[in-house]
Length: 479
Image (cartoon, rainbow, N blue to C red):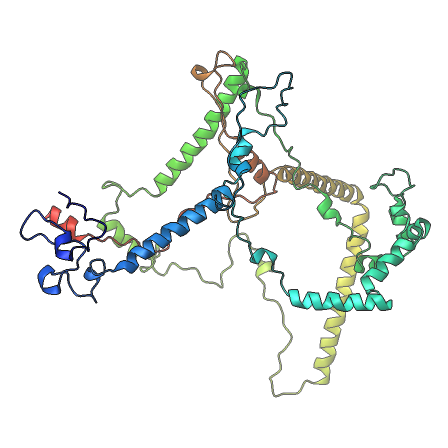
């Protein structure tokens, strides 16, 4: 219950009589309790900040609310409401609509999206200082002021002077200096032909000088003019791989795919057979191992002891003349000096041997006259054999040109044939299923035409070893 109002002339009651509590221990909330009675805590502790705050805290809140209200008025209305004129805040509603007034065109009225995108705040956005900063701005300003002073004196920068000179030249002088290539009055021409007007300025000059000064490109070598492969860029698939193929064409494609798979199967079986571990029956026994170890250590005995023939006896089929000893000249000891007679005999033997060789060569030449037909026949056979080998080499070279070359460490492998079984053939174009991949087909075509080395997909290689860590909580559950 509230206390009765006091008369105007009476004095105000004391603080104890201004508040009437319900209980004997009630206290006035406006009066700060003592530290002993209330237990509000120390003033220098965070716990007592809010409890021991004074009237300055309330003043701070009021001041913050007032500043926030002023900022909201500035954003929404562009300034305080008290300073706005009445025309901007109110309008007179006469209730009378003017007749005959034309409706405004829809184009004059802004769209709703434009109204939404318009800023609601009247406060301008903060200026981006970094956007207006220029690197070396002070230096450029000083340079600009210097050139302004020089321009007043009649000094022009070099770039500006050259530009003015180019602009002042007549078009005929420009075309004569730059050549007929930039003449606007020229007609159309073939830039790949030999009579190119752009090459007239380079006619008669040294080729090496033109190449070094980069006025004429280096001539492309002839070996680079040849194509890498004679194969077409896009190969046409066999007739059996087309939509709705004939029975014969489809069977031929199936046979081709069967041969490819058969080769792969034979290669896998051969590798498995080479790496196969021998069975118990095929494994070598101890006796076989002992024989292999003793191989070549024991010499085989001859059929009859002492049955070796004497080297002095002549063999069968050899005549006595062939086995007769060849007479040799008497040998002279190393320390003895040859006599005059021995020297004459040696010279005579050398002359006789040379004379016999000459006579034999002359006799053979005379005999070759009667062998002209046989020699001519041998020459023809030799030429025919060389021609056959040459044709084989050319055919082999042409066949190798169409085959992919070894450009890298990997060997080119033909892609799998895109073939469908007889039961998988589509009855209509609507139910046709796509086969293969265009990207893989183009990639393999580049490899087959020697434009790209064969590659394989890079495998993921872990850089660090995976470390298995068992957390404590998981270990407690599993135990």
